Amino acid sequence: MRVVLVIPPSPFLINPRKFLPLGPLYLSSVLKQLGHEVEVIDLAGGEPMPDVEGDVYGISANTATFPYALRVLKEIKENDEKARVIIGGPIATIEPHTCLEAGFDQVVVGEGERAIAKIASGCREKIIKEPFIENLDQIPFPDRDAIIDNYYAELDGEPCTNIITSRGCPYQCVFCVKIWGSVVRYHSADYVLKEAKLIRERYGIRALWFFDDELLLNKERDFKIFRGLRELGMIYRIFTRSNLVDKKVAKLLADTGCREVLIGVESGSNRIKRIVKKGTTREVDKRAIKLLYEHGIKVKATFIVGLPGETHETLQETWQFCEEIEPYVADFDFSVLVVYPNTEIYNNPEKFDIKFDLSYHPYKTKPGEYICTVSTSSLSSEEILRWRDALEKRFKPKERLD
Image 1 (cartoon, rainbow, N blue to C red):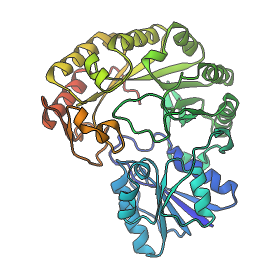
Image 2 (tube, helix red, strand yellow; image 1 turned 180 degrees about the horizontal axis):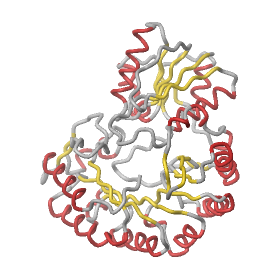
Image 3 (cartoon, rainbow, N blue to C red; image 1 turned 90 degrees about the vertical axis):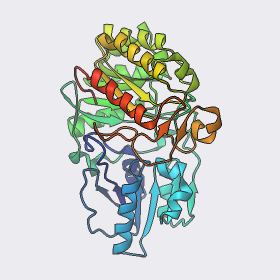
């Protein structure tokens, strides 16, 4: 079977060709392993859909790229009205029936590797949801060869690419969608280091950005990976939570080549953090950020403006907290809340002091292009947006981390 996998445009991103969309690249590897012919069409930079032919077309999209996925769907159907077009990714998982109503022939809910294999073998179910893969080491490495030449990023001056080594998150933040569930599944350290070695030898890339929801949950495994990267002569960057960072962790990260850490602070108000079930406090955040700084690791602190219960007073607390941590932070990032289906906010709006409109606007976009679709009893959408812009202007970073 000939399968065409399409990555839709992402014009809201400052640089849509910085990090690889790994989801469809995993599917490409699975299909090739099964003997199918695969072509990956990368439209992330805004290119028009080329004239290609396939037995099946698969589009991977999130809520922000869904409107562009619909355009691609239309173009494919106009060229061949009998074409079978499938959608996967976060939007398919959280709104499968919306995707079917929009004209997609099949929808993949959740993890896509088993589903794409079924589709390629002739499955015609409208909604396909396969059990999660317990042993992630069974999955082949993503097919970076397909599009890696289109992408370029740097970490501390070294060519960099992204990698995912686990799936799932056990935390219960009320604004988050659990695409991969609450139980964390891991690639083994040996698998990850083999992938890292391949990346270095085949592409000459010496830096990795881990895209796991949270690293440092499985410290024994993670530390083995980090020590292995040091032996490979590679540096790296991670996402993690402040409650997972202590002095031992900070030292190990520094000693093994971690150059940057992104920490989701979300708010400088402990009241807001309790409402959204963040599971940290501003005191814990500050301690972790300062520890990382003292060990020579750059920190990017991210915040969400317009969370449930937000007021002028809670945003003043966020402002004050940013001033407190400013000496230790290399980069700040301020986004606006977007309420997604299947989040606790969406499913139980009566519990939260918030009103929202469902939209496909990105939570993060180019400066001057943010759109706010939430409000609280104390703040209008316009006021929330003004606060976001003011925070960004005041805490403009000394250097911009990705």
